[in-house]
Image 1 (tube, rainbow, N blue to C red):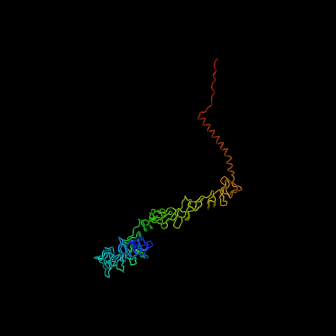
Image 2: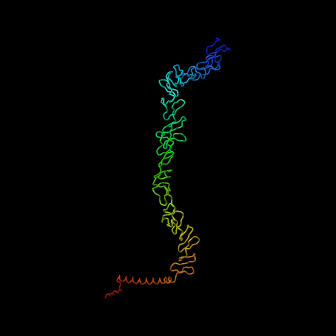
Image 3: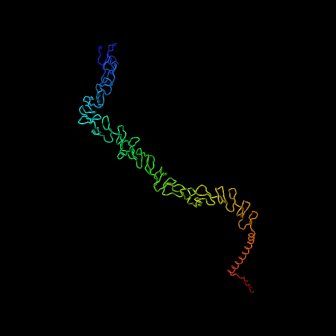
Amino acid sequence: MCSTTCAAGYYSENSTSTCNPCSSLCQTCSAFLTCTACSSGTFLVNQTCVNCPSTCAACISLTVCQTCAAGYNRNSNGSCIAQCSPGLYQSSVSECSPCSNLCLTCSNYSACTSCYPGYYSANNSCYTCDSFQVLKPDLTCATSCPVRYYVDPNFRTCQPCPYDCFTCDITGKCLSCNEATDFRVFNNQTSRCLPKMGYFDNSVTISVSCPNNCLACSSISSCSLCNTSYYLNSGTCSACPAKCSSCLSLLYCTGCLSGSYLRIDNLCYDSCPERSYLQNIICVNCPYSCLSCSSSGKCLSCSSSDFRSFSNGLCVPNDGYYDNQVSVCSKCPDGCATCSSFQSCSTCKASYYFNTFQCLACPSNCQQCMNANSCNTCNSDYTLNSGQCRVSAASSDSTVGLPIGILMGAAIGGTISLIIFCIYKKCRRTEPKPILIKAE
């Protein structure tokens, strides 16, 4: 039979007079979940045992440790931390104990390893500079800070300027820049030291040079402006065509080198071509009718292959051709001496008459006519008779006598030819051969 007094970790059940186990978190209890004392690593809150923080080996609350877990030190506020706070050092009993006055860190109470701002370490102790001095980054005292540092008036220490400044004020604004070594220039609007032309900011003091032929860039692979004779091509700078001082692409110059001129095809050449003249550095097209011209647009010469002739500073169409608003004149229709277009004759050639801007052929043998039925003058050997061109009498007689003369000439020529033939063949009369009679 069980005793009414139970062992640690058990409680007495009155109804059965038995000892039952407490909750695993309880060291002692009056009921299963009613703790009266807690196991190690827990603490009692309202008769319940709650786990300590993981950094504590034993605690009295969530924020106050009594002892610390392995690898942790008990801080002055009762928390367990991996490394002692500034001004404390780790003692031999895993406690963070205070350093001597002015020490930021120490290896023991009397051995300072670093000091609070405004103090410097010497002989394991911390000292301050004189009132007229400042503490430099090398922990020595001086009357002023070196370049790239400003004076912190609260601690009289030298604090680093932003990376782009050569000198700066307490707010971090640059006061001056070092163009010679940092390749930076001062910007009045922003009070920053910006990379000079041809360099970019890589978040370090010294600016980085842009790629070849870049005047401005944001990185080693991203140009935004190119040198003379180069153009921007997908973030890089490519060479312009020959003799270009500036361009938009390999096929489009916007300026030419000295001694070269920009033609209409947007490329640069040593001289202007025919049918153009030089205006500043650009080859400007002459009027379409000119072979060469002055800067005022007057023609100086014309091309015969354009069917044009020079007249008072103009290249006008030759007779039989008209101006079709292109260099080479177009031929007028048949019969036109002059015309203004292919559908509009102005004057007509001989043997043609004018009829509603057309030149139509005169009747046969007319040299000039008013219309298709009325001649004005006739060709030679024809006589004008009542508006018609008829064969003249003298021409008719000569026409009738012509066959007789031809026949007589042929007869005489034939006789002469026969005589010559006979002489050649030694022509003579043929004599009869003798008849032979056989004797009886």
